[in-house]
Each structure stands twice: as structure tokens, then as C-alpha cells.
Length: 171
Image (cartoon, rainbow, N blue to C red):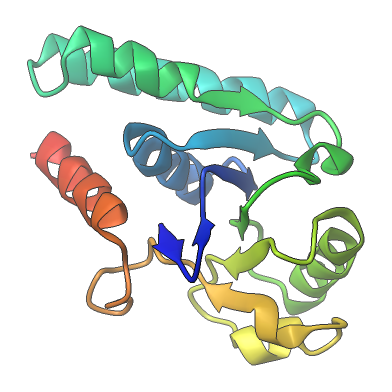
């Protein structure tokens, strides 16, 4: 995604449950570098294994060619500590829907990532304003661009293509 001379090439996803895995799948297929972080280190490996299985199934069904499957999986790695997220362009949190937990995460992320890094939430029920309220620069927080295209009309072509790819592969 390019806007005002800023491009997103590395996306870090905090939380490796169903939503985090889905976001990772879309981002990896779009060619982005994806790092997964979870407070449970075993969950990171499980998420990467899940993505490997998903790409393999899509390849077996003929919905994804082998080269693209391998490239997408190669785009995905794990971050062992939250400090590993320091050089990313975008962080999307996909953690438990608890306001205090999300606020604490974003406060910590502010001390780790650069000022140019976009911080996004995949929340489906909490206010972005409330989540960002305790942070130094609340204006840098956004809802996740992967929620829905209708809800997020500003998606770049690459993200739209990735969302279309996910829809096609699920059919």
C-alpha cells in the first residue's frame, strides 16, 4: 500500500488465532513480509503450520500454484519477543476482545515500533478511539483494513487483490 511516499512491506500480526491466521494468509499471498507474534510461543509455530497446510490444500485443489504457495509461506516468520516488531510498517492486533488488554498492547507497541509504523486493530466490538485513548499519539491507530472491503473503501489494489484471492480460494 503506497500513500504519501509510504509503503507497507512488512506487517506484524499480534495474535495467532483464527483472525490473525486469516490476516497472515491474505498478507502473505499479497507478497508482504509477515511476522507473527503471540505471547504463547507455541502458537506462533502452530499458526505457521496451519498456513503451510492451508497453502498446500489450495495447491492440491488447483486454486494456488506451487510457486505462489511456497512464496507465500516463505513470507511468513515468527517474532519471539515484541521487540522483534521494531522495524515493521504495520502492526495489526488480533487478540482477545478486552479493552484493557488491547490498550496495554498498544501502549507497549508505542515504545517498540517507529513513529511511522501504522497500528491497527482487528476489533469487531470495541471502539478504536477507546483503545487508543491511553496512548501518546492516538491518531496513528486504525481499524484493520482486512475487516471488509465495504467497511474499508481505501484499500489499495494489492490488498483488494489479496482479498479477492482469499474469496476465490475459499470457494
